[in-house]
Image 1 (cartoon, rainbow, N blue to C red):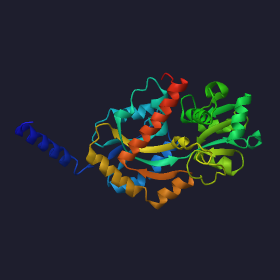
Image 2: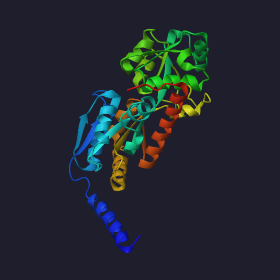
Image 3: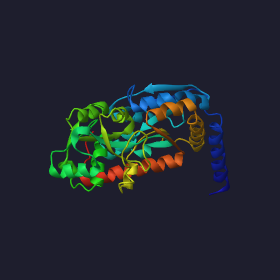
Image 4: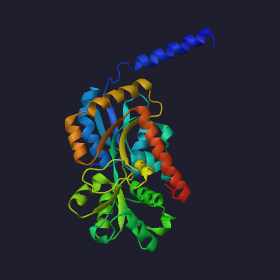
Amino acid sequence: MNKFVKLLTVSLGLTASAAYADYPERPINMVIPYGAGGATDISARTIAEPLGNAVGRPLVMANVTGAGGATGSVAVQNAKADGYTMLFARVGSHSVNPAMKATLPYTLDDFRFVTVYEINPAACAVAPDSGINSMDDLVAKVAEGGVTYSSSGVGSFLHIAAVMVLDSFGVENPLEQATHIPQKGGGAAATAVLNGTATFLCTNSSSIASFVANGQLKPLMVTTAEPVVGFDAPTANELGKPELNQLVGWTGIAGPAGLPDDVAAKWGDWMAEATKDAAFLEKMTSRGSVIELMDPESANEFIRGQYNKFRSLVDRLGMRIEG
């Protein structure tokens, strides 16, 4: 590299850095790729106030829905990588969809994650009168035949969760051994177990916490290393299945792939401040969420690790779907 090129390169680098020194200079658009009232929307709007205070600029929250989170994700994928259009990414949009869908219009390489801040432990549960009192009981029932599981739809987190759990517990050909009964949403999936339409489900613990508390559902396992408050059930680690620790829901924030280092670093600082807010913590933990802040490097490592786990399972069992 000659002296002129070297000086030009250094100059351009300094100019790019200076360009973001005053970021943000205007409101930031925050895309929520799922509908109002869902887990992602609740998480995003709960952190909006403390995060906005940390940023020092208005956050313009917008639900851009459709295609299981893909429509909003593509909107951010195609946005200018200047930090003014960011995405509330979710396990479904950025771990499950890339692993399950053959024609998804984006990959993980199209985004730069600046944080994961919320973890949603998963739990498997049955009806109390099912006669199933443990994971061993469930696996034995599967071997006998006639076991069904509900989910929020084909290719959803709940779908892959049930299959992954059965596979981990040694059920051969889980797609054939247990029958999948997809429903329209997580609430309907829980109701299917409540009314006996399905034998079991594996879902975010927060979505069935009230049913467990009321004795309407019996938890068999939580996928975390540590016990989950309100769930009198063994952990995956206690059952000798630590690989299931990756089977959790999560919410994070991402920008387009070319997001500058300076911008990503500022988001890390803002989130560190926002997630300490007492009101935010109280609201989220009361819903069963675990607030676990990851920096940009840790967030990318976590998401790619989960995606690789899901993709390996999907490829091995032939679960890829079109669309």
